[in-house]
Length: 251
Image (tube, rainbow, N blue to C red; front, top):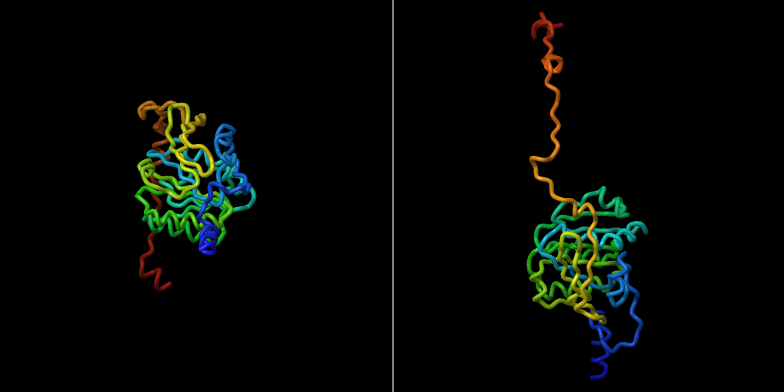
C-alpha cells in the first residue's frame, strides 16, 4: 500500500500542498505589481496558465509579451496557435519579440489546436506556446496538456472565454481578464501554492487607448485631376503594323 502511495505522489501531475521543497522561480512578467501578486513572483513554468477573457484586443497579449520576448531573444522559439487575428509584426518587434523566432499555426478545431500544442510541448522545440480556444474543453484534454507542459521548461498559456471559469482545470494559474478605458484588470481566480482573489490593474498602452476616430473624419487622399494628368493617363496609339500573320510565319 505504501509503495502504491509513493508511486502516486511521484507522478508529475500530482501537487502536494504540504511539500517543503522550494518551488522553481517564476518567469518575470515585466510588471512589478503582477510579479508581487504571483506566488513564484512571475509566470509559472512547467504548467498551464489560463487567461480568461471574452473579447480580444483588451491587453491579453500585452501582459504576456515582456516574458515571451525574453525567450525569443535567447533564440528560443515562440508559437502562436490559432490567434483570432494575424499578429502584427511591427508591434511584436516594438515589444522586443524577434519575429524570426516566432511561428503562427492555424488549426480549425479545438482538438487540432490542443494536439498541436501537445506535440510542440513534448518535443521540447518551443519555450513559449500561446493557444486561443473558443469552445469548451474536456477536463481529460486539459490534464493531458498539463502533463506535456510539466515536462517543458517554457510558458504555456491558454486564452479561453470567461465561461470556462465555471469549469475545473488543472492549470497552475487562472486569471480573469477585463479592461477599462485606461487599464487591464487581472483578477486571480486560482494560483497553485498562492493566494487567489487578488486584483491587479495595469495601464494599457497608448496605442490601445487612442480615441476612436469616425470613418468620415479619416484623412482621404484625393489624386490630382488636372488636364495634364488626364493626358498622361490616356493610352498612346502606336502606328499600325503593315505586316500580316502570314508574313511573320513565312519570314
